[in-house]
Length: 626
Picture 1 (cartoon, rainbow, N blue to C red):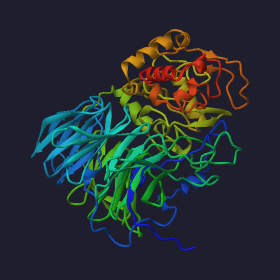
Picture 2: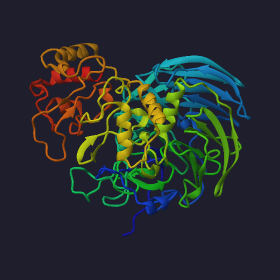
Picture 3: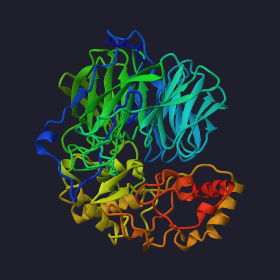
Picture 4: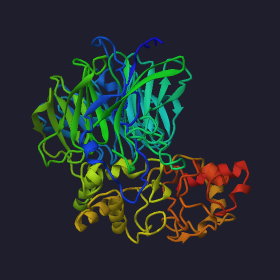
């Protein structure tokens, strides 16, 4: 049957979006140690489409401006503007990559966009719940405004006419449009959990939002007053094929892929969209995670055209598109390398080069990409806090230039060493053949929202940020007495050779320094009523009390869960509960209401099933503020 090729609107998504620049799929570990076939690992393809490219027959005549999707770095001529999330400092660089000015924004600051027409930058102050407006005059930076947003702004994108700024907010799960004239909110759209990057199409009629845990990207109509959104599931390998996840509830050979960790999305030429997405850790197959790009076309008849591409770089978190050359650039945060796709929005799209950023042994941690006027690629190395400039050519990168260290880390030296280890890929000490990094399953120190079969048990990936200090013992069965023992046992299970004691201490220091996730804004009266239930008649504080909301004890609930379940379960901390779905050790409660209505595998914890709907709503409101 002849299938009509739809009009293309390509999107690239990193971590899962219309073109997903990093899309990771994995399956749960089925044995005590992860086993990876050496030959298949060695044969991993640097870049390969899993179907015909969606692009057009020729080079695009136009495409979105760079400011129609945000990032950690923006090109200004051959210079740059970069935001360092670690220190929260905005830095202006000249064409020689020398810093000419800096401005404090706030620790954790996320993305920025630069408008060359007004010569203003808009920076998401993640901790300050605001967008900071900065005038960029020559070599100077001057703050000229600050606009209030819902809790925890992250992604930013500027409309084609420059009149509106779209902002995603993580804690409050909202997309807001702000007027660039006065910062007033124009409209708001509710988002799913853990939203990150946002991009606007060339014509300004559609926005794309990426998520860390939904396995989807959301396409939002900007051309009508409703701003309706539609989630598009990111496709992965077919069940039973190399790279597919295994559903722990199904027989061993039944697989199901899951997409995770979409940090960035972007529209490119010929109306094509791309999304980057990474997934969770696993084991027992090769490789346990596949990083992928997802290329999405427009929705026609309710169906979105989609094709995936496998990529060899690890944890892609940043991308850029050069409209002059139609080249797509994607950087591997865990592997310190750059992938370049030539003719990216065309049917002839193909790999140009995958190569390391910098010299062997150097640390980068790329978290931002931009294209200079001369076609060179600017790379924000978030871990080393430097900017690199490279030229991509067939088979190689050339002309490397590197700035000095632009900011000072807020982390102690030992914790910063732990950061390097946490995101490090291709390190056989951490996992078999270095296929997994800690950040593979714990992006930003959080979790992938999935449950896996681990050593015969169905266990969910735990949230780490804010839940480390004072919550020992560790693991769901409470089997590891301290953090260093827990990290070492995890590395052994993943097939790694293990870190030296000093490195384990460094990794521990980094995890202990991670702040708790922000909680969403909730009605104060409802929170107070929920707290009264929690502290009073339900007796929740008998196990979840104190500063870290855990009694640090394992409990036997007196139920026969079967061979795949634990006999005793360690009491988890409730810190950051709003960010840690699904719930219970096995992830059997998809939401907090499901947990409170006793719709999961664990029973007898409290008499919440008798609560009324308003009481459940109040209790959920309180729990989400922990």
